[in-house]
Amino acid sequence: MDASLLDRESGDRNSEQTDVKVYIFESGSEVLEKLQEKWKRANNKPYPAMYSSIFGGITLDPAMMVIPIDDHMVHRGHGVFDTAMLLDGFLYELDTHLDRFLRSASKAKIDPPFPRETLRSILIQMTAASKCKRGSIRYWLSAGPGDFLLSSKGCPQSAFYAVVIADDYSQCKQGVKAVTSTVPMKPPLFATVKNVNYLPNVLSIMEAEERGAFASIWVDEQGFIAEGPNVNVAFITKNRDLVLPPFDKILSGCTAKRLLVLASKLIETGHLRSVKNESVTVAEAKESVEMMYVGSGLPLLSIVEWDGVPVGDGKVGKLTLALSDLLWDDMCSGPERTPVPYE
Figure 1 (cartoon, rainbow, N blue to C red):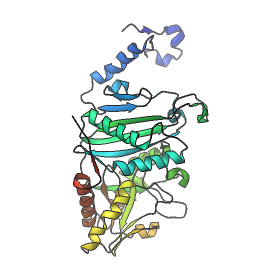
Figure 2 (cartoon, rainbow, N blue to C red; figure 1 turned 60 degrees about the vertical axis):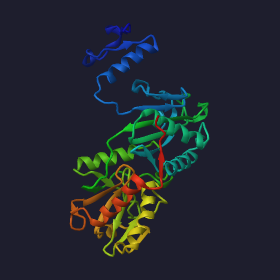
Figure 3 (spheres, rainbow, N blue to C red; figure 1 turned 90 degrees about the horizontal axis):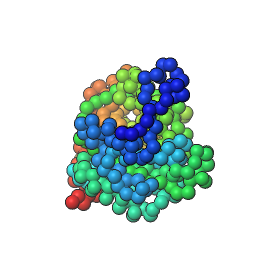
């Protein structure tokens, strides 16, 4: 590598950082070589493919999976995203997630660089090129690179990014602890848009971890249950009613909405009395006999303790497992799967 080391007299102004090596790279090839050093030492390849509309193609080199520093999504949070699970070579609920993605983009005032079907085709082609058959794909729409100003009018073109994330994804059947978050939740305008402004979510999950819990639960100003930091919340009452909070002030979860449809099968068998999408007070929620997180990467996760108090008998509930099986079967063999044309 021909990159030169920054002069210590001019570059090392903080005596506590005299051991930091700062290189001056005169070419992109030198930077790439440095980035590739990291991945040469890696034991696995967690991101087998990425698409970027900035260079208009798919890269299989993780060192090239980068976003411009002046992209409005990076320095202003002006971007939206979504995710679709990849299971045994099929993308689950791709179209449902893509539709929500474009609704979020519209609310964020970002026009996609391509029509919907082109975006869909890119995601499928990227997944096929990755050779990955288990994990997820995540994709972003940004106002695009341009400048560092607040307004995005200096960004000539929106940007579309996507990545394949390899993961040995499996059904969750264990029970976890939850706590009520003290971090203020997002107002409805932002909570209902799947945007990249996730600092409240990050602080909320960190708070839960610091308190020995898996995740947290937000309660709105009126005392109604809202959602978790990146999941919806569902409850089963003593009367065997499945209840999920309405989506008017929180994110409309694709998996949660699918659960509402599939749960009708348990009504037919008499295991559930009803399925409801209605407001739930904290008092009502804490009287539930079963409680669960609902999200794409779970798809269901039983909550056995909330704020130090057992939920129901403190064990993973039978109805929660039955609902989890319905979702898992749907992911493995249901009609909402899109096959990936691997070569």
